[in-house]
Image (cartoon, rainbow, N blue to C red; front, side):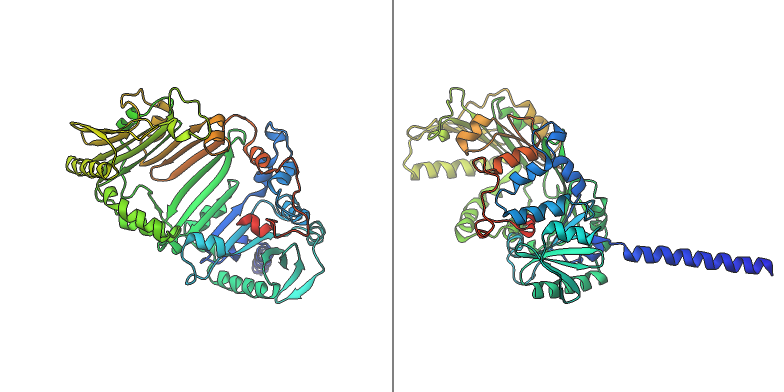
Length: 499
């Protein structure tokens, strides 16, 4: 009898413990469980890590995290700036994960670009201290809107329910109704429940993790991107994978082949830009252009241009490579930059298509009334005031250049291209950036094999990259260039910051 009573007591104790744990889990906020599975895009930000990377002083720079944000948010009103800082820096919320997601009317948009422009954005986070949060946000008085406590912010509304908060723009009544609908959808199927996608976001080990549904691009699956700041926060590191509708990772090199590194022999050590892609004769260009059209709708002029180019793209069977850099005697003076750049374009085709292309270009030159020298497998022509341009057939490669084809090669670009199906390498000095496009010089390595990797940094400075971005954003040394009553002149709210 004693043993039975003891077992009953142990069983009751276990039930109480389980109930306690379960009730604790119910009261805890799992943000991704409240995001609907059909969201167009979801961004998970580790604000703790972001603040570390914003702190230039911590990373060998001059600006604190607060000063960096002041300059990055130069176009914000003072109140909106304070609200954004609160979301990113205050201990009143759990900064380990702040989530933003976008929803849209799937039948009313023309593509991903339209979704980004016209989608409804919702920012959500777990609240540690509601009184402290309301004070720091300088929120209006509490009102009851639908199922939520609502507080007016700067052109947005803070909704609170339990330990979770949401920030939305637009009419509060409409926003509350829409939020309730999204929470109902998420209760049936959330983003966290999606195989692959949920785990990608929950890892939360980078500064930012983003997933974008490819539905607006007439495709299934998700593009998943993580971003962080490497090399003592001096560069942006971006990685991406593609998950199909079943949550399985799909290689990004479908319909492509590895870049032929022999074409890098046409590059020069002085080149500042090299890009290459390995294509196949059976590459589905219609599908590619359909994808581009869905992501970034083309106007009629762009579609007409693509219609003219497409027959030539279909002839490519191998690698297409483009390289450019300053000419040996170039002064890189503004106003004549196009005549100071040397370039080469190399395209692999079968020999029949090379002959067709040479003939087509020869006809185009004659139509334009240009004088040309034709010598065997080469055509040379020159426009007034510009370097001579040569079109040459070398084996199964068509080469178009305004410089000698015999070069030493660019070893840094070769390393970037090796083993990849798409690659872009750039190393543009500050002086050249200022002349060509009026901006800073930069270094970029972008590689696509089975996944996507890219590293970006500014040249000419070892300061933390967010500090450098902040200094670029600052206008004429004036940290606050927008008055509180001048919101329409690019004043940013937390929702605008997401966009």
